[in-house]
Length: 317
Image (tube, rainbow, N blue to C red; front, side, top):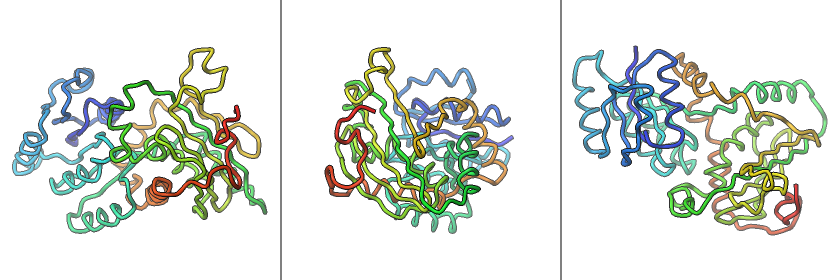
């Protein structure tokens, strides 16, 4: 049985990591979060040590590292705010453990280069959760695109609106310096999925860039993609607002809707199974999406010029 530590235990995504650790037959022996709202640990690993101060967590992990080999931590799972991922990955590698990090892996592509060097110097490994690459509908779509061998590129529209309340503005997620901005915070996994399905990124144009919404155009080897992201309630289609739904997700390819709203329940567990088998998605797998969102973050918006998403102009989907 492998021993795990977890950073960011009070976060939204942390229970999926705890479930994956338990489902793969391993143990969580140490967890850390500045917030003590972590009662969910009881459902998985009630005997895990817990710390609200990173310094004490660091000391505990180091004590285990210097102790008997069976007690040492093999993996550190990282569910902390985006801007801390790079630091916490480094902590894991320095502690003699492999890192399993939620997306976005880091905020900037040059951070990947530094982590590659640290992997080489420590002999440890960094893996990322890119669960959409394991979703059966996305895997099937990728194979369909590869088999099609069509002369022209696919036309894709991506819309993702997930309404957030006032709390969002006061949390780290509402601070672009910490979240990386909306494209990084809620879009990076979609951009990775598009790269996974349609190949290398060839062009990246930003039409709209605001704190709460953004839109642009991405061109891949096999697709032209218009995208729009928002956390504003007023951007939801009327049908969603009237029914009380706070999320709208739509991906169309050549006018055909792609359905993959279900099938997410066990994707973190499947990700852990692959990582433990030495088949996880490593640092380089993240480069395309991280580079794309970093460029979006710093780009000067073109406005309503060229091939822009209809929602950039406020048109209903």
